[in-house]
Amino acid sequence: MFSTMARDPSRGENTTTGTGASPPPPARRTEGTIALVQALRFFAALLVVLYHAPTMNPDYTERPSRFDAFHLGGAGVDVFFVISGLVITLTVAKARHFDLADFAARRFWRIFPVYWAFLAATIAVELLSLRVGIGAPFAEAGNPVYIVTSVFLLPLPFQIMEVAWTLGLEITFYLLFALGFRCYGLRGVVAALLLWYAFAVLYVSTPLGDVPALFYLGYPVILEFAFGIAICWLHLNTRMPLGPAALVLGTAAMAGALFAPEVASLAALLHEPELRREFQFGIPAAILVYGAVATPLKVPGWLLLLGQSSYILYLLHSLFFGVARAAVNLALGVELGASDLGVAALIVGAVALSAVLTHTVERPFLLWSRRFVPGYSVPPTGFGAGIPAKRDT
Figure (cartoon, one colour):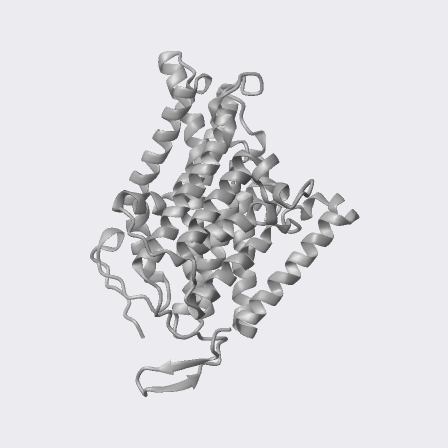
C-alpha cells in the first residue's frame, strides 16, 4: 500500500504528514501512459453516444439501423468507472500529502460547473419544447425534486439528464475516497468500497431491491472503481508486465461482450447464463485499462483533444441531438434521425462541437478555476488574464 511517510523537501528527511497516507512519487508514470488512457476516454464516451444513436429515430423500434449493433454500448460507462478509480488514486499518489480541501476543490471545479451549464441548457430546452409543443419533452424538467437531485448529483433515480446517474455515483465515490483516505489511507478506501459493494450485492439479491430510491446506491457496478484502484497500485509498485498483450486482450474481450455476447462474452466463455455488469463488462474494461497504462504508446494530438473532450461529449450529445434534429426539421423539413446517414452526421457534429468547446471554453475555464484550488500557482492567461495568480505555499 501507499507509504504513510512523506519526504520533506526542505529538510531532506521523511516526516509523518498526519493527514492520511502520502505515497512516494510515481516515478514510472510517462506521458505516453497517460495519453493512452486519455484516448481511451474518448472511445468510452463514443460508445455511449453510439448506444443512444438509434433512439434518435422516431420509429427506431420498428426500423432496423446499423447503429443497433451498439445496443450494449452503455458499457463505455464501465470503462469510465475503471479509469475514474485509476485517475483519482493516481492524483492522490502524486501529492506530497493528502489535503481534503484541495481534493474537494479539484473535483468540484472539474465536475460541477460544466455539468451545471449543460443541466441549465437541458432544462431550458425541455421547458421551451414543452411550451411550444415541439418534440417529446421531459416534463420532470420543471419538477423541484428532479431539479434538486440533478443540481447536487444525488445518487437517486430522479435525474433530468439521462447520463447524470453515473456522475452521482462518481460523486459518491469521491466522497467515500476522500473520507476513507483521510482517515485510514488507501486501505480505508478499499475497505469502504468493498463494504459499499457488499451492500449493493445485498440490495440486488434481497427484498431491499424493491426500494427504488436505493437503485443507484445499490448498483454493484461500483466494484469497477476498485478495479481502477488496483491498476493504479500495480502501476506504482510493479513493472506491469504484458501491457501490449493486455491491451489486445482487453480490446478483444470488450468487443466480444459488446457485439457477440452469446458466444464471446465472459459469461459465454464461463458457460454461465448471465453475469452481473461489473463482471461481464467491468473485467474486460479493467484488462483494457491495465493494457493502456502498461503500454506507453505515443498518441497524436488530435486524439488527445478528443480524449479531453470526452466529458463534454458525454454531457452534450443527447441535448445536441435533440436541438439539431429540431432545427433541421423546422428549417428544411428533414428528420435527420430517420436515416443512418443523418444519424452519423449528428454524431460527427456532436464530436466536433465537443472538441471545439473543450479547446475554446473548458480548457481556459479550468485554468482560471485553479486559482480557487489550494496550493495552485496559475499563470495569468485565459479566463484569469490580469488577475494575480495564487502562489504555492
